[in-house]
Structures are given as C-alpha cells and as structure tokens.
Image (cartoon, rainbow, N blue to C red; front, top):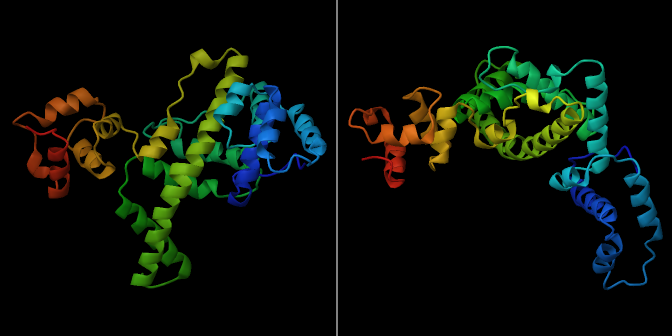
Length: 293
C-alpha cells in the first residue's frame, strides 16, 4: 500500500473510501465481518495481505476514530499528514495563519488566509503540488461574498481574453467560460472544497484542543458559506427562509448586512418595504414562500 497516496482523485475515490472504511472497521474490531460480507460470493479469497496492509496503515494514524468516521471520504493517512503539519506549525508559533477568517473581515486579508488554507489542503490532504490556491482563493471569496454568477463569468471571460490577447471576447469564448465557471462552482467550490474544508477544520479543532487553545478561538463556518455562496448574516438568514441565492442577494441589498431570519420575515411584511426594487422573478418567489403580506 502506498502510504503517500493522493486523495481527492475521482479515479481513486472508491478505493479511498473502501480503505477508510476498512481502517475504521479494523479499529472497531469488525474488519473480518466487513470483508466476509464483501466477499460472500468469493469465500476462498485469501485476505491476509489486505488485513496486514490495513494494520500497517492503522499504526501510522493517531487521530481519533470519531474524526476519521466524520471524514470517511478522505484517506486517514492523508488526514494524519495534515494533523502532523498542524502540530509542527503550532509548535513553531504559527497559530493564526492556520485559521480562516470571515469573508467580510477587513484584516487579515481573507483571500490570503484562504489561499494558505487551500495550500495546506492541496499539499497535505490531497498530496499534490499545485498553485491552484491562487485562483480558488479569490474565486471562493467572491462566491462567499455573494458575487453574482454573471459577474464571476464576466471576470473569467475578461481574464481569458487578456491571456489569449484577443481584442474582444466572442460568443464561443463566453459560452465556454460560463460553463467552466458553473462547473467549478458545483464540483469544486460546493463539493470538493466543502468536503476538504470540513476535514481541515475538524483536524484543526482537534489539534487546538490538544494544545488547550480551542476555547479561545472563533472559526467561521467556511464550508457552510461555500455551500450557500453567501456569508453576510442577512443573506444567509434569507436563504434559511427558503429563498434562492438570487432572491437572498436582492433582499440583502435592501437591508442591513447583520439581520437574522426573524427580522427579515417581519421587514418583508411591513408596508414600507421596498418591494418595487425587487425583480419580478424574486417577487414571485418570496410571494410563493408566503413571506410578503
């Protein structure tokens, strides 16, 4: 078994999840039952080498089983690599650089902090060397700040136009970049990085608890913000009421940024609420949700 194997590769996803399951079941003392169930039709297969490999890997992982179980789609060996990275960083006094900050925070720069988090994910959890954190740092931040899909696409079209040294972007380029942006949002931001960020923060909290530091720190729910494409309290609260991201964005533009769902519900029913400022699409949506008087 390659103890330096990568994580997050779609081609290896099944093997990775099976390995995680077997290691967890080995810790729980039920690996023989798991293998027997899987090989019901092939009872004569010799599984000695498989169990020895799992036991060898198990000896290299010190993280608690409960944490591994919560992140069973990520290799336990890669999770251990990230944990060891955290221990080294904490020992050297680099605590703050490990913690992502709220997307709307002014200082430290949330984009740079997010780039550092993504770099650690790429290097230690995924086991690959890349500079993709430079792109996904700003892309994720723009998405979490509620930037419109149109604006994200326009940015990427312009970026590609400049890279190709074109005088103007044609319809083919716009269509290609639009599809790419939507795919990156769904497969990268809302799935890939949500999965790895949850794992990252779980391991970070565990490492901080070991050092007696967890109670002193507030870590924003970045995975939730990435999933929603929102981080301002008003926009998140509007989505809690059942609104789409587009509707929540329009509503939040008419209200202060720090309001909860109760405030929004009450405000929408007041005679003074500026419903004329809403698009017809959004107006129909919030009427359907029963949020307007």
